[in-house]
Amino acid sequence: MEKLNALFKRRGFVYSGSELYGGLANTYDYGPVGTELLRNIKNLWWKHFVQKRDDMVGLDASLISHHKIWEASGHTSSFADALVDCKACKSRIRADHLIEDFISLNKDLDIAHREYHILTQGKVASAFQTEKVEGWDLSELSEFIEVFGVPCQKCKENPGTEWTAVRKFNQLFPIQLGIVEGEQGLAYLRGETAQGMFVDFDNIVNSTRVRLPFGIAQVGKSFRNEITLGNSVFRTIEFEQGEIEYFFNHQKSNWEEIFESWKKYMWEFVTYQLGVKSENLRWREHGDDERSFYSTRTEDMEYSFPFGFKELWGIAYRTDYDLSQHEKHSGKELTIIDPETNEKIKPHVIEPAVGINRLFLMVLADAYHEDGERVVLKLEPRLAPYKVAVFPLLKNKPELIEKARQVYTLLKETVDGIVIWDDRGNIGKRYLAQDEIGTPFCVTVDFSSLEDNTVTVRDRDTAQQQRISIDGLANHIVSSIR
Ligand code: GAP
Image (cartoon, rainbow, N blue to C red):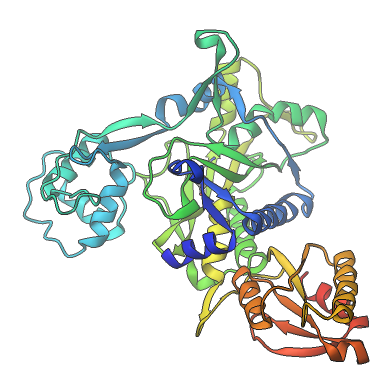
C-alpha cells in the first residue's frame, strides 16, 4: 500500500482530506487524475447497469433525509460498530477488526487450552479458520480480547494492553435542520443510497411505465461515522455507492436465477469492463451469523487488495423486508399491480451494492506494475484519466510546436476524454510521467513529422513505438480506447 499511496500523492490521484490543516481522519480529496478516473468508473457503471438495460431506471435522491426513514430501515437502532478504546494511547478501534487482524497474525496459536465462559471452542476455532468474527456480540468480542490478551497495535511496546469494555457506536450522522429544536428538526445524512430506492418506490411506479421485474439504480454519496485503520480510500466516512434494488414478483420469478444472473453481470463488469484479473477475485457467501436477519442469501465479491482479500461488492436477497418496514412506518401501501392478474404485489428485492471508491482502489492496485525502474499503470484505456499525450520533440523550435499544436487540436476534437500537452523536460521524463498516470498513448512530433506528416506513437504497456500518418492518427487512437 505504501507504494500506491506514494504514487497517489505524487501524481495527483488522492490526497489526505484537509491536509493544509493537519488532515482529518478518514477523509480524502481526489486530485485531477483521480477525479477523472473516479468519474470514468462511475459513468461506466451507469452505462452498464442502467443505460444498456431495458429493465432499469435511475434515481438521484437527497443526501439529507427524514429521520423516520432510518428508524424504519432499522439503522437508528442497529447500524452500529462495536468499538473498544486502548486506555494507554486512547486510540479507538473496531473490536472485530482488532480481533481479525490479531488472528491473521497468530494463525498457529494454541486455542484449545483456554477457558471460555461465553465463547465456545467451536466458535473460536471457526474464527481462526475464516479470520472473521462477524455476528459476534459485545460480550463475545470482549471475552476474546481478554482471553488472548490482544495487544494494541499502536502501542505494541506496551505489553498487556488495557482496553475499555466493547460498546456500540451508531454510524449514522444526525443533523439538525433550521432552527427547529428536537425531533422535528432531526434528519440524517444518508447511511446508504439503498433507502432512497424504497422511499421513492411508489413515486417511480406511478410516474413511469415500469413492470416487474425491474430495478432502480443510484450512484451517490453515503456517510458513515467509521473508525478505521488507514488503507487509503477503502473505508472512509464519506464515500460513493452504486446500488441497485431489483424488484420482482417472488411467486412468479425464481430468486436464485435472478441472484445468479446479477452475480454473472457483476463479475463481467469487473473483469471485462474494468479489466481486473479474475485470479484476484473470489465470491464469499455470508454464514448464518454474519447475514442480516431479513436476508435469505448474501454474498460478497472480494478482491485481493494489498492488505488481503476484502469485500468489494455485496449482493443480498432482502425479500420484501424494506418495503414492508416503510409501509409499517409511513402507513402507505407500497405495492405494484400485476397487469396479467390485476393483483397487488409487494415485490421482493435483490440488491447488488458496491462502493465506487473501492472499485477505484481495486482498479489502481490491479493496474500497478513495475518494469525495472519504470512504474506503469496498465489501466483499461476506457478508464485512463488521460487518453493521449502530445509532445513536441523540442520546446524551442517554433515549427515543431506549430505542427504539434495541430496534432493536439485534431485529437482534442476527436478523442472522447482528456488529451494532454506536455513540453517540459526530455522525452524520457515525459514518458515516465504519463506511464505513472496510465496514459495509453504518447504522440511525439519530431523533425520527420515536418517532412512526411507522420508522428511516433508510443504504447504504454509495451513501450514500443510506431510511425503513424497524422491522417490516420485520430482513428488509430479512438478505436483503441473504446
Ligand atoms: N445497502 C447495502 C449496503 O449499503 P454495505 O455492505 O454496507 O451494504 C455496500 O455497503 C458497499 O459499499 C460495500 O460492499 C463497499 O463496497 C461499500 N462501502 C461500505 N462502507 C464503505 C465505507 N465506509 N467506505 C467505502 N466504501 C464503503
